[in-house]
Amino acid sequence: MEVIAQKLPAKIDYKQFNSPPGGLLMWIVIFLEVITFGIGLARLVYNARLEPELFHTSRLQLNASIGAINTVILLSSGFFLAKGLHAFKQDNYLTTSFYLKWTLLGGWLFTMIKIFEYWNKLDAGLGMGANMFFTSYWLLTGFHLVHVVVGMVILGLMLRSLKTAPEKMALVDVEAGAAFWHMCDLIWLLLFPALYLIF
Amino acid sequence: MERTLNMTYLLLIALTLLTAVISTWTLLDGKMLVLVIMGIAAAKYLLVAFDFLEMKKAHFFWKFSIVFVCLLIIGVVGLFAVG
Image (tube, rainbow over all chains, first blue to last red; front, side):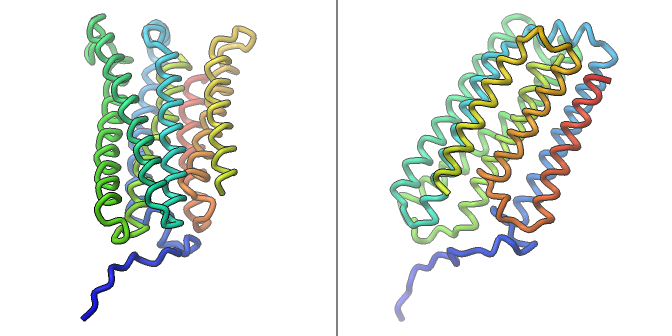
C-alpha cells in the first residue's frame, strides 16, 4: 500500500467561528493570557494612583530607549514570522526557514537585552521587593519573558520540522505556533507604554 | 499580501518611534500625553492582531473580541492613569 505524506488542507475557511487563524484553542489561550496581563496592568495603574510620586521616580529609573529598542526587535521578529507563514502557505519551505531564523534571532536579541536590563536593575538594588512599582515591573516583564522563551522553543521545533519533514507539517500547527509568538508581541505592546512611559 | 505586511511593518516602526519622541515632549500636558501614548499602543496592537495574526480574515466574533479586549485594557490603563 502506498503511503502518501499529506499536509492538512492548505485552505482553511477562517470565516468559520471555530477556525480562527491559529485554531480555536490557541485563541482561547491568547485571550486568557492577554486578559491576565491586562489585570496585572490594571493593578499597576491602580497602585500608581495611590503613590503617584513613587511610581514617577521609579519609572524614571527604567531606560525607555531599551524598551523602545526591544519593541522594534519584537515587532521585526513578528514581521519576519508573518512573512515566513506566508511563504509556508505557498509551500516555499526554504524561505519559511529563512524567515524563521530571523524571527528566532529577534527573540534571542530581545532576551539578551532583557537580561542586560535585569542585571542593571539588580545591580542598582531595584529587585522585586524594592517598591510596588518594581514588584509589578518584575512580575509583568518576567512572565512575558517566560512566554518569549517558550515561543522560541516552539519556533525552534518548527524550524527542526521544516528541515526534516516539512511536507508533514500541518498548516494549523504552524499558524498556532505563529499565533503564540504574535501573542508575545501583543502583550509587550501593552506593557511597554504602561511600564516605561506613562507614569 | 506581501505589500500589506511590509506597509504594516513600516507603520508599526514609525508609530514606535513616534511614541518614543512624543514621550519626551513637554508641549502636551501629562494627561493628554498618556492618552496619546495609549492610543498609539492600541493602534499598534490592532495592526499586529489584524495583519500579522491575520484576524482580518476571521469570523466577526473574533474580530470584535480582539478589539473589545484591546479597548478594555487600554481604556482601564488610560483612565486610571489620567483619572
